[in-house]
Image (tube, rainbow, N blue to C red; front, top):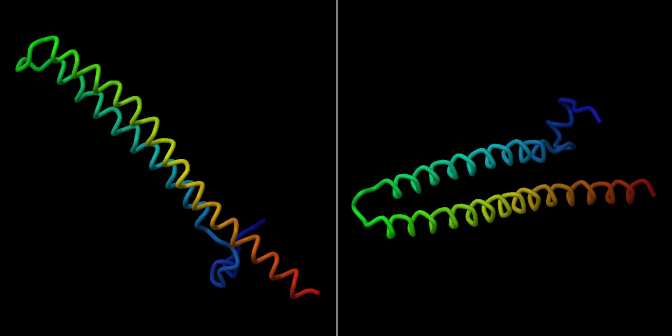
Length: 105
């Protein structure tokens, strides 16, 4: 399945599914970077001297729990969204094959 210039110009082959896979990995890196930033913020709250230690520790634990849940849900939704986009382009390919089979009959 080679990609030729003619296929790109006539839109016979879609390049978006490949781009979606690249964007998926960029999104994963972005989510993990935000997770690290939030983790540093949680440790900053733990070291902050404006609250009593039990209040700081409780906030720290709540932030860590939120971090784990938020990262898990974020990664799951990002994966589902990218899969839905790829499915839309797969449907396009299948419909094109059905159309081509109908023309050859």
